[in-house]
Length: 374
Image 1 (spheres, rainbow, N blue to C red):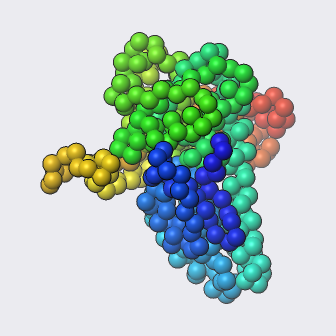
Image 2 (spheres, rainbow, N blue to C red):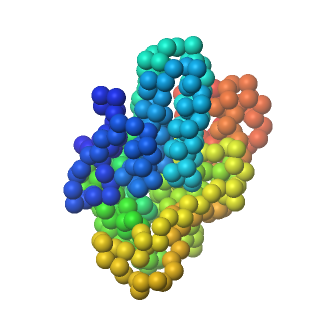
């Protein structure tokens, strides 16, 4: 996509203000970690992978000018502030843990060199996210028929990542391969990430898109109006339960009812192997004003209570497959995720899992995995 979601410029972080899209393209520049934390909390930037990149850059800003003797204490303050902004997206804590490892390995460096090491790691996280999305897209596009109609929820595109996208990355990869793909986007109340953001970036890429109200998905699927559903993920538990934008769970139920594949596009940074199941995923509850106000106007009576949960949990048994940059995981998802974890841990661990019958598809060219993953 022509617009960059987030970038590092002159020792500051520049990001597009997603609250103002599609009406205005406004870029905000932040010079300290408090500003980055505010941007995450207020949804200037959103989407799990993009939040992870922002947090990494926020750490670099927060440690600028800090000498090694004070670096660990300073990191604890910065990380606590950033981690408290959006608790559900695991990419945030994943990025902070990665930055902490680099910090601890660099404590012998002078202040400027330490800052540069952290900055370079944040930029590596940004580059790797784009590469992961492209690889994920190549795996996922093989699952799409030609032609096909994809129903998606929220925004799991370039705006939700460092670039290219997860769910929309699959669509982009399919289009690049010459497939005829159209997208139907749930509007995704209450923040309208589908109608505002997904439709906006697909229009920029000249990919056909149609917006529907969230409660129209059942009728659409009952009339065979989509060939599959593809969503992103804010966190995938070790058993395959998926946390994603509120409204994802009922969409998965509808897909199963009508025999439509329900795919989750999740880079490795969104998989939490330490979380056994969806019960352990914290669900963020945001301010009621986001729900009862639309366009600055109140749409519910003053004083009425409102629940505004930002995410829900889709059980693993409703997920047709999880698509990652290392391959496609099919049910039973828990066994597939175990196989994936062993691949990540190295050839010895992978060989130990050869007899598990895990349903994880890796590229044939991947010699470390090809002998036992299908």
